[in-house]
Length: 239
Image 1 (cartoon, rainbow, N blue to C red):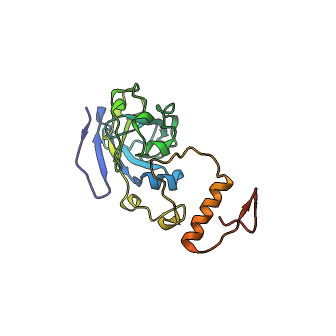
Image 2 (image 1 turned 45 degrees about the horizontal axis):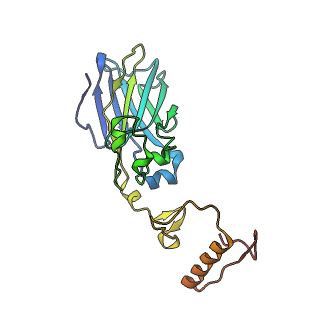
Image 3 (image 1 turned 45 degrees about the vertical axis):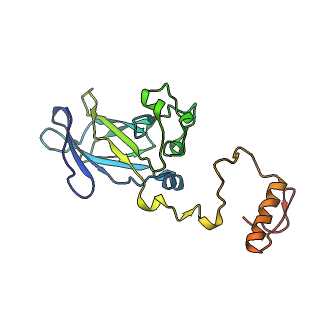
């Protein structure tokens, strides 16, 4: 049976006493995810780190520990899973996992609408993007704009076969990511917003599409820009 204590300090550390006296101290150091933040820097991932102690409160410093990881919606529909095997030799008991870079990554809704980690954290996904047959909660997913994700982790200590669950943690947006100041270097005044009812499945711009954009630009700014003739710009490209 797993028992959890209250928060130990201001760094969101949790100590968990697991089976056979093994303890795991969890410190989540990089829960800075939102659709905006993750899309802007996908290589940063989520860092999940902590320390494992043996029954004598000594750091676990040998053997391999297997970590199984799941990311779920607020109603417990699994969106992603992966596994990490960490060699604890010379580790002083500490471990660090980068979620998104584990072995055997799985996207169980890939045949529907969730094919990568960007999709996993995208709150604009609709019920049709989820496989309702995967598990009961997936048939009732309805994401809100500010919904978080649940991170579930279990670990298997060296020499044991039983997995030991760690407390679930919420992945939420950091305050500044909720209202991004710039996207790809562009401010909100430099971007066009497309209404949800607009068909967004078109491919490359046609000449007529491009000309319309130029007309809008001139109307708003009074400044002409280079023209596109076929595949050639009349002067250096404006973008």
